[in-house]
Image (cartoon, rainbow, N blue to C red):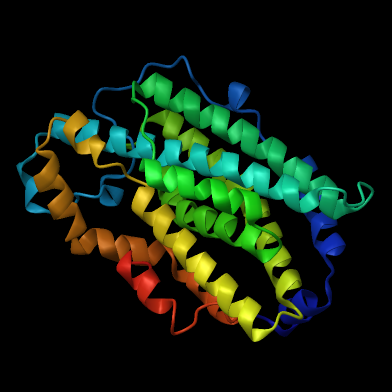
Length: 302
């Protein structure tokens, strides 16, 4: 990071940052109804995501699968990831609304927060439509996770609201940067990934700024508490992204597939790759403590 970048980070206020983000939103935002070619036929041989991002890529089971099974699996996997994204974006919108409740609507922070909510509504709609076009059934995280998340979205405040948001978006960002360029990936996934990457880059900058701002005068107990909450949220998100049901729906032996995915060293490496920038940020904020490291390691984020 340059000296100028560090100086800006240290002196810029939330309103400075959100003013720039509002300008970016005005200049570059997308309407998925226009940008995505929803009616264009889906080639039978195109994957739902780059094969390298499949949970089974690099396993013996993957080598045994037919090309038709590989295509089907990646379409179910991307559908599961998108529907986990929808579930999480609905939580995100409630967290932001709670955080911005009764704040000054004249501030650029308030205006960008509502702009982000509008973006997330569009993203959820385009993910839902993608799953419909691909013929993907409903996938949800485990019921216990869904119910436990009700507590987070009800009590999360300040950095505790924006931390889980950042974690989810950082993981998806690296994946989708590959998907949007994948020539053998179905066009609607490439297009929706591009939209999500461009617009979520602003959301991630907003979340980072809010987290830094909230932690400026935080004591040790609060920082440790937030570090633990971030880690638990990361564990939940990483564990819920791909439902075990995708394997059965792709015509595979579910238990064998789950076991091979769990021990897949290639998948573990790809997961760690997608979390490099996130871990650097958390460490910089003092949120990657010795107590929470094992949680991140358990889901291959470190």
